Image (cartoon, rainbow, N blue to C red; front, side, top):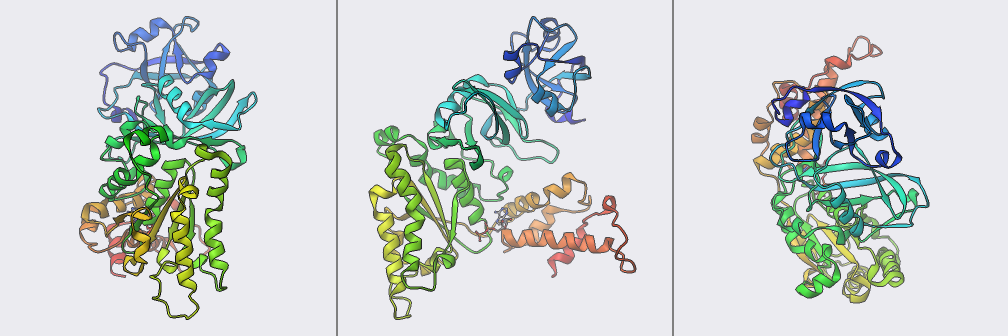
Length: 486
Ligand code: ADP
């Protein structure tokens, strides 16, 4: 039973009948309601709000309401859908004992739809995070759950994309969930098609985020790089997340650029993407050096200029209000080789490097830009690009150590494990020990190749049209060992 994960309350579960929420204003809140007499049966004494477990699967926060009959629990449409129950069903509700560390470090919400009213063209993330933290304080959020709230008179429905608990190792059978605290950092995302812009995302962080040494990267799909990430946080994030009046007071200067360097396939792109998403809540722009480098003289300089055009236009139009533009430059060495090092005789490279340096130096045009360069060959880069004010924070992303490799293997086998495709004999610790000098990408390759060994076993060579029995697919330790010897 899923309840074991939550710790035991020692009390027997209560059976309640599901009813609809009676009043419109109750339906719009994220709380469920039960009769005061029922609440007292499983409330923690003295507390009004109880965390409950419905139908052994869904943790929610609920409170007492006079209008609910005894023996009933009122769930709104969103909650009923999430708990997979209908009005009239009976559910078993037990007290939920939160694990020790259950505060959310990060909650990422994605706009699903606007329920009624005239939608705003933009949502102020800083303002809204403050309101949400207050309103949902100590309430549980689970990935996949929908959250409804009112903003400027309109009801918005968001889906919880990610719920990341501080310092918690992800364990196999758990959903990502946790409780909103006054320090939870909330990221808002709205698809372009919604026509709603999220502004002030970088001001939305509470100061506490910088105290988090151990960010739970594994749940974001990044293994073994928490020390590097903490370093990036400390050196490059602070200036971006605090609002300008705070940074001015603290005398923090904006870091305009950082360089992630190290062997290929170690997670530089994964990391840069995550940084971009955290800073402004949307997928960052990723450009690739060799792609920018076009054959025609002059074109590449234009490409470099275009790259910054969005940010410049935004800054021109909205001044200090402009959003942060994160530009990720993969294989930056392809266009920023040291000047004079390429002997093509055209001087094309030199002028591109100059162009990029001018852009980075243009104080006015670049206050709203964070450039993240990535390279496998730092030694090839033009020295001038690495000076203060340019790609000044340089972080080495090296090959993972044994623990890092274990985390990466866990990340890439997680889905199989959840779906029982991973045989019990697979020992990820042993595989981590045997894969010294493997990069993250290579470890991912090993997992893929082990899967293909397992799939091949299922195929009958006599009759390729015979349907495969999905249930019996198992990726075994032998499959992994074969994959290692490829
Ligand atoms: P880089 O940018 O350093 O060349 P990538 O970030 O593009 O490497 O990695 C390629 C793929 O390898 C990723 O999409 C991911 O699937 C896997 N990978 C690499 N490093 C890691 C890591 N540290 N954790 C999890 N997966 C990783």
